[in-house]
Amino acid sequence: MKKMALLMLMGMTLTGCLLTVDSDGRLLDNTWDEGDVNRLSIGNSDTEWVRTTFGEPSSRISYADGSAVWKYRNRSEKDTEVGLFLLFSVDLEQERLETLTIEFEQDVVTNYWIESERY
Image 1 (cartoon, rainbow, N blue to C red):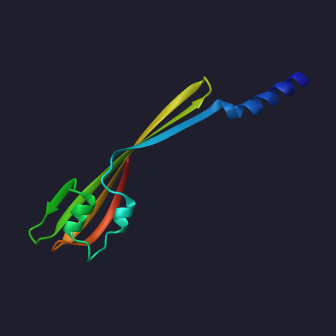
Image 2 (tube, rainbow, N blue to C red):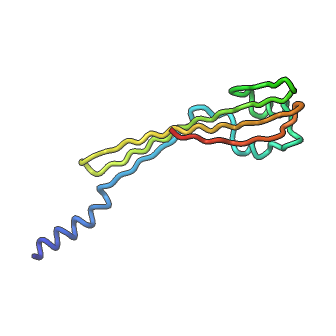
Image 3 (tube, rainbow, N blue to C red):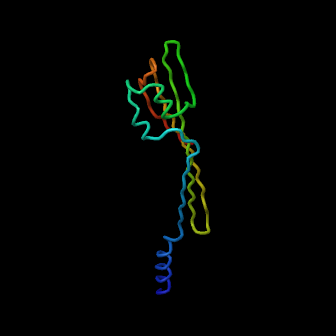
C-alpha cells in the first residue's frame, strides 16, 4: 500500500514534465504596422503621404468619379508544437492575413479599416 501511494505521488509530481509546448511566429510579408495606421487621419492624410508611409499598395482600384481604394497586406505564420513525453506530438500551423483597406476621394483619405483572416 505504501509503495502504491509512493508511486502515485511520484507520478503526480512528474506529470508537469511530461507536457511540452513550443511556439514561434514569424512575419512572411509585412508592409504596415499599427503605429503607421494610428497616424492615418481621415480628411487630412492624402495619397502622397500614404504612398510614402506604406509604399505601393498590394492592390488598387480606381473609380470614374475619382475615388480609389488601396489595399495593403500583412502575412504572418505561427507554429505551435505540443507534445506529451514520448507518447505523441502535435504540430499546429496557423497563417494570418491582415488587410489594411484605405478609401480615397479626391486624393484624401475618407475611410480605412483592417480585416483579419486566419487559415
